[in-house]
Length: 331
Image 1 (cartoon, helix red, strand yellow):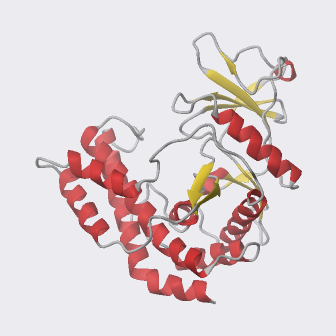
Image 2: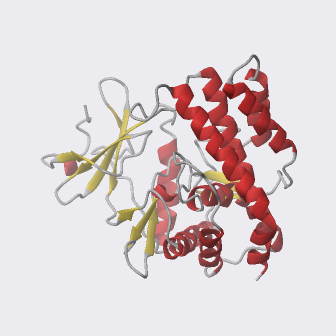
């Protein structure tokens, strides 16, 4: 039950959103929507709202469109319900959500939007209160996978393939951190005109993962999502160079990357695909974490084995095309 903590919500109709994510319970308040109301997953501590408020206030001052937290009647950023769950309300930003990227024009708009976010936060002075240590410690994820990969099963065999491929990965792991969104899958970006010839990126959504991350992790995760036209749960995953070229052209039309950053972005896309493959594969062995589609798969194990295979295929596709990616970024 939503706590009665916001006068602005009283009397507004509540409805489901077609763009709800998998982690936070999300409702729309008002018709047309005026606010987004969320029950926050317990994987996020309440301090995450201090980070969201600091970053979105800074974006607002820089002239960027962004959702803003709606203060409670007593000035808080969140409120608890009778069950102890944390709820929040944010301003609604109109636009379109894209769940699978297939058009270079949208990729270009996505890259430009993220570059505007990075450019704006270059001047932000903030120490994050909600920190997820090791979220993208890829070597640690690989060690965790190795630690559970014993016995005989399809998942264990796949774990061996992932670990062998990771052993051949080439890239840097110690780049400096910068203010980052932390989860730039394409559905976390808001667009206008996504069905036309000139789409525009409006704002970034789902801000629970704001943190300091290196540019290869931030953009590597974005490109892993954006440049796989069939999506995480599709067959025949591959890395689309057209989408990569458009996304990076959009980014660099706003914010220029250094030579070191360009090289890191290429290796980062492969790295994060492998990291996610390892996490899916580990859950295919342990059967305890990721959600699964009961309509398509008989079990969590089957779904995560499918996902892990897809991300490994994506990483292989990136590695095959790294020379072409590097040439595209050199121009």
